[in-house]
Length: 386
Ligand SMILES: *Cc1c(COP(=O)(O)O)cnc(C)c1O
Image (cartoon, rainbow, N blue to C red; front, side):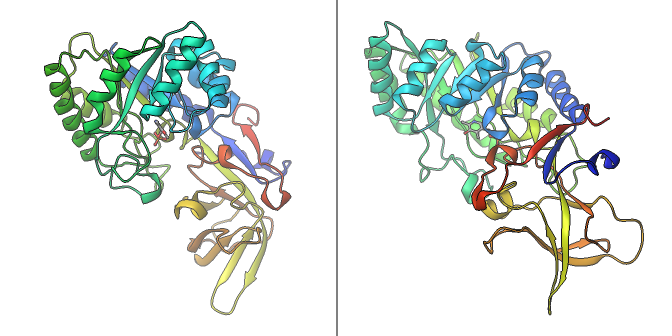
């Protein structure tokens, strides 16, 4: 990826820079990998990045939307995602959010508990509607990812346990205001091996056999998102392993005739195209460390502080001079967790140098806050700065 440095000099930092060619290439890879499978439906998980410009491009590429709040349903509709390609998950949907989604006529609710099912039934009945519901099932598959982003274990708050699935479907069949349309799973995020997805397929196959034996038809299977990206080598591997990912489901999941398979990809769609650009404010010589203090902090990109993540870091201004130095790269916020990385190897860095935190397109801008009364980061696009 190249960066328009001359334009950067005219801009206030920190800001997000989005490379739209990278996004389009990612989207066309997804299209190519699913082209011969009209029964595969890819939804974009809006929570990864809700920037309107990106949503517009993703919508134009034909993806549906996976939402986890009423605000996301509204954002999806505003950017032209067709209502019948919107799915809505979340353990704590409010009455207002449920009504909004019913009014819009979304494809389905991913229901995460029995009390939620009853609430949706009541609200839909009051509106004279029937809500299409899928049950989010916790398949108890270990995604071998960070504890804060694994979701498919029984200890997590998400979804219904496998053994509670059949009774939940029976309850839905008995309720006027809802229609059972599918099963939903989501095992976690930043999953870079394909084995957890194979394990998920095996669980779904067993569950389907059981449900079929009970005479239950399931029109839709939704396997969630979670495909990981290569954070350490963004230029070598800009496109995630979509080919292996879709092939895993094609070969391991036993779909029934006419059954539709849905995916909800977030990070793998938008992470690579986004970079957080900061300026170096000061280089501080400590007694045991040297610090590069930049003008971006965890209010702009919270992943390092929240998940202990590392973003590949570059000094965009450095000339090829001098040996690499070890720096702790830190932000200005008054919290000791405001650290992007420790012992980062960078060329000799000076005040004013641009620092790039790569692969920040997912769970970056959308998680920004105004803590310390900081300004929210701006966003610029490659076609505006060309
Ligand atoms: C977060 C989330 C996703 C997207 O996860 P990624 O790891 O970004 O692909 C998909 N589905 C649900 C229900 C989610 O909560």
